[in-house]
Image (cartoon, rainbow over the protein chains, first blue to last red):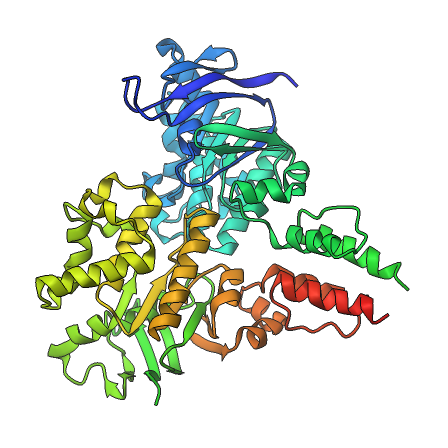
Length: 282
Length: 284
């Protein structure tokens, strides 16, 4: 796969002076077209600062970020970059601008100067994609958190981006809302080949990614598949990441001499591994 | 005697208008002193409405709430005293920070209680200790702090009032796993060491299962269950019918019943699951 976003020796601090604390400290990372990348790390590790560099909301103090070969520092390219890479933030209430669902979704393409007839098509398409088409005439304030967040995602999709960045999109939602949003993200990635960069504190969301990048104190400490990351319990503990209960269960059983070969990333896998073991036990 | 008693509590939003909606329906609860209570239910089930009643921010449409046997609304002019005794930490409490320094912000509650300066200082130090907030931060502006630190300051502001009952609405939302664990441990320590009552509203069933003595389950304004975590989470079908999931481990163990006969349906934690499975292996 060809590289879609290239991050090269990215350094960032809020002050220009040399002694200022570096929020990002020499980040190198390539994100491939169509990839689903999850970013994990503690509060204050630099995750949100990093993601804001990917659509030119912030510019590197040192180093470069390229989106499809366009340098984010190139002011002439800023509209191209922002229509290629959309950003979804944590609080759904801060991202809704209109009082009717379909008006809200139309806001982005209107600003891009898209023809009204095309806007209509894109709004309908986007709302169907996030499964909110039946609510197109509803008022935005009457929606649940998960529904609002899906409308915000539809607003981004209507601008036809190739990549969507999501900064803890589910942390203000209840379990039902979280599932709705995560299913939407997975659908966009799998069936529409939209590149996804997801910041989350929920390990059960991160296991859906192709790769996980772990950030600590402004540096990337590891990039690997979820299976490889969650196999290394010592590493997870070292960086104070929570260990999903099903991962821990299998791990502890192995420590106690139960002969299990695989690690489980979710409930289904865990049940299968244990069922197989106990079935052959007779 | 119950510390907090809720009798036939019904609440109707916008009563007498076409938009009237019953948010709580004849709730009866008796909560003891020094209990850690989990309050769960899907969005819109009435959790926050109930919490607001316990802090006297809403007045029951019907029924009453008793604190140490005395009706909350017996003397409406003295209702402030109830709010001093029942502290409430709202969702995203850091949005309510407003003072110039962390110290002044935490002092706001105790000052309103009419305490003297040295008493206020003591309360502030006590609160900082409980919430594990660095004393060096006291003279900074709350707006210079990180998200996790702001959250601690906001919670310290309520703990500084030394409430007998502490209610927290999703206090860990948006915190990273480490800060979440720390905060919950500190709340648990506050409840244990000071014999306080804590009521925790959360969507995280693992946290609720781990810390609660008893759990209140609400659905559509009705009280569905009020029982120990083991009893509540063993009712998987009932929980699912009200839009809740048990802790992951509990569901896994339930699915293993067909291959591991005799497995208890009251397993909530990884360690309990490991023990049960190892026992099964040993006894074969």
